Image (cartoon, rainbow, N blue to C red; front, side):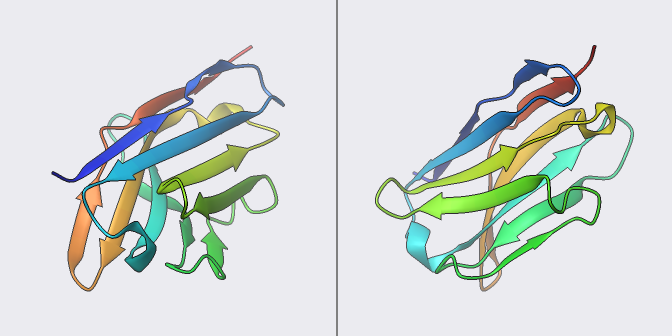
Length: 116
């Protein structure tokens, strides 16, 4: 059974940091690119960061570039999103996504609230 379980969300003040984790099981983690999306209620889900299957290439949404870092640990079958200098507009539900050759899996999401 495929599982992607996000954790690490919460309430943080502007300028603070959070580290999201996406623990996976049930598929060949090292064969899949991993992505983090976020969604604000009433808006489209947007791609925040992506990392290649081997972990050598990463891409970021312009608004988070330089503040967020995506990474992966193949020994733990887990992907991460380190979020620094958080801003009010980073408030959203963050989803983990695994993708490979038309196959795609999603986690349930973890809520991040940036508020003073």
